[in-house]
Length: 99
Image (cartoon, rainbow, N blue to C red; front, side):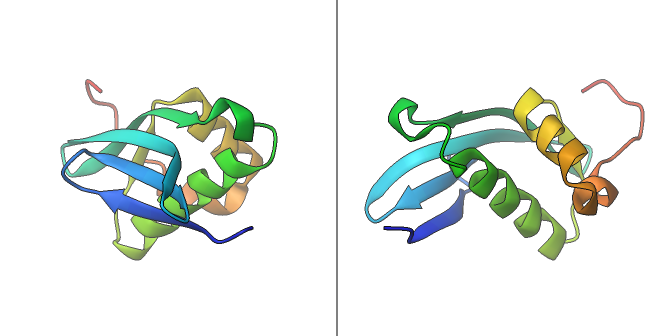
């Protein structure tokens, strides 16, 4: 049952990891100075340690790349994911700013 999708709920300002009709994880974000600040990532307790967080992170970052957006990985999980997956490092906005 690996029909996972990542979708952007622009009203709630969060990316959702969806399995069937169930939201099994999400990553909250906010906009600041034309970039996306990812604040917090959550995966349902019973689904942790199964790679679902990485699926969510990859979906978020792939969407931001496709839209030409930069990310500020305030969430430690997203920051760690980017560090471990260097193909996403170009998305990180290094511009100093009050985030």
